Every structure is written in structure tokens, then in C-alpha cells.
Amino acid sequence: MSGVSELDQITRAAGGDRAAQAALVNRNMPIVFRVAYRMLQDRAEAEDVTQETFLRAWKALPDWQPKAKFSTWACTVALNLCRDRLRKKKPVLMDELPERVDTALKPEEALQSQQALQGIEDKIAALPERQREALSLCALEGMTNIEAAEAMDVSVRALESLLARARRSLRASLSAEQEGAMR
Amino acid sequence: MTPMPITTERVFELIETYGAEPGAWPEDERDAAAALLASEPETFAAALKAARALDALLMSESLPEPSSVLADAILSAAPAASRKRKGFLGHLGSLVFPQGARWPAGAALASLMMGLVGGYAYASTGAGYDQVEDAYYAAFGYDSNETWLSLE
Image (cartoon, rainbow over all chains, first blue to last red; front, side, top):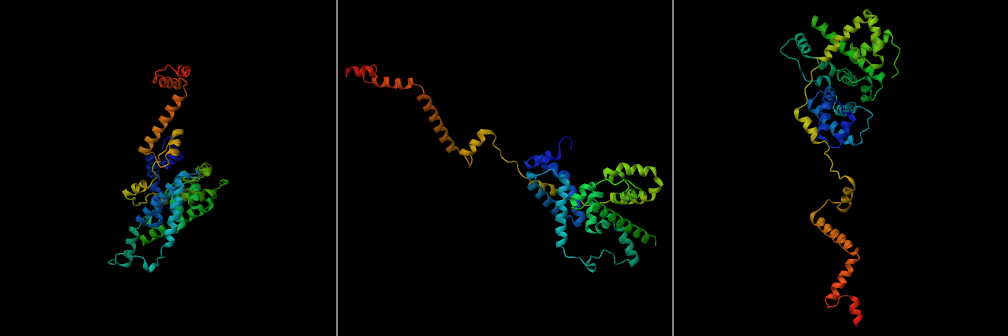
């Protein structure tokens, strides 16, 4: 956004300027949606969270204090909404998980087939909630460590710990997959 | 966070935490860490290789796009521009017409104001009264009030 500060854009959006509102949505909606989707793994739910985040933003804009970037604020709201939804969800037991394996294949073949279908998205989705949040904000959305820590309401040190554990888990998962494929 | 002095251990931590790309490292440690990295490339080669492989996989992440109607739905709930009255007249208008201007009330007020202004302007000129008085006595055939009094 050349020549227009975010605060100026927010002020104009709060005053009903349609162009400023559209610019704010176009710039931040994809980030909020992706963060919500990684947490909830459901497009409709991620869209609901995105919409709710912006509804709250419209209410907050008239009294906006430029303490944080809009995207950081929006991700904080979205993460809180996601956590609420995840808490309300009934814990899924392992034997309730939907069967994704082709039963026509032998168990070993089926396992390899399943692994081949899995992308990095599934491995990220399998991470613990807080590790997923840290990875999503920092590694995938490019937030600085300070912004991501602020959005998650943790210290930078705690964020680094979550990030390092997330990356170690992903590497371990990938190594296990490669070893399985070589057998 | 207060920047820690850069050590070999800290560079390993940065690689393990933020990946192989120095651009993703904390700004306050980036230059010193990159300098140490450049001075001891063999030390960090294996860690960088592993981190680069994971970075590449993370970049390959594919997520669904939000539906095209989502942005419209969000924007339809955005605040509309408020109708603003500017300046003294705007405020005066709000006081006189708190429910907004209505044509009959506006016309009545305009008539009242014209009457008041016209009446004041006429009354404020002393000649107006004398002219009316002369016209009154002229109607009885006298030049003025003085002529009428002299006959009594």
C-alpha cells in the first residue's frame, strides 16, 4: 500500500469509506482465512471465523488504537474464535476417525498409498494446537517473532520453543515416512 | 526480547526454529548470525540442508481458497458513511429540527423569520412612523397632526 498508512486506511474504513474497507479486506482476509483453516481443517468453519473476525473489526475500528498491526489483531481474534470452536468439539477417538484407506489393498500397500496421498498439510494438521498456531503465523504467514508472539499472547521465548518443536515433529514425521517408503 | 550474543549454539537454534533463510530470523540477531554462518559454513551445512528441505515442503502447502462471496458478505456488514452536518448552520439545523427538516415546518419558520426581519427593519427607521401619521391626517383633509391640533 504505497503512500497510505494502515492507520489512515483504518480511519477511513471506520468512517464508511468503501474503498478503504475493501482494501483492508482484500489485504487481510486471505491471511485470516488460512490461519483459521489450518486450525479447523474445515473450509466452511474457517469462513465463519473469518467473517466473525471482520464483524468484530468493524465494531472495533472507530476506537482503533494503533498498538498492533491490523493483521496481528485480526489473527489474535481469529485464533481465539478457533480455540473456542475446537474446545466445543467433542474429542474424536481414534476408532471414530473416518477410514481413508482403500480396503481393496493389502495393509502394507494401503499404508504406503495413504502416506503418498498425505501432503505437508496433513502433517501440519496433526501438530498440537499451539505448535500449529506458531508455525502458521511465523513460518507460513511470515509474521515476525514479536508479532506472532503477540497474536498468540505468549513470550517470544515460548514462541521459539513452539516453533522448534513443530519443525522437529514435522522432520520426524517426514523421516518416518521416507524410511517406511524405502522398506 | 534483548538480543543474545551470537554463538554457534544460537545459530543452530535459529536454523531449527526459523528455518534456513536468514530473512526469517529475528531482525536484531540476523546480521550477526549470518556473519557467523558465513565464517563457519561447514559447521552449519547439515543443519541448513535439513532446514531447507523442510522450508521447501512448507512452501508447497496447498490450501483451499475462501469462497468468492465471503468478501462481499464481509463488506456488506461494514459500517456505512455517516451523514454529517458541518459548521454552525449544521448544528443550528440540528437544534431547530432534531428529527430532520420537514417542508411545512420549514416554510412556517421561514415566514416567521421574514416577518420578524421585515418588521424590525421597518420599525428601526424613524421616518416610517411619521409617514403613516401624515397619511392618516391627510385622509381627513389636514396636512399633519399640528394642523389638526391648531383647529381644536
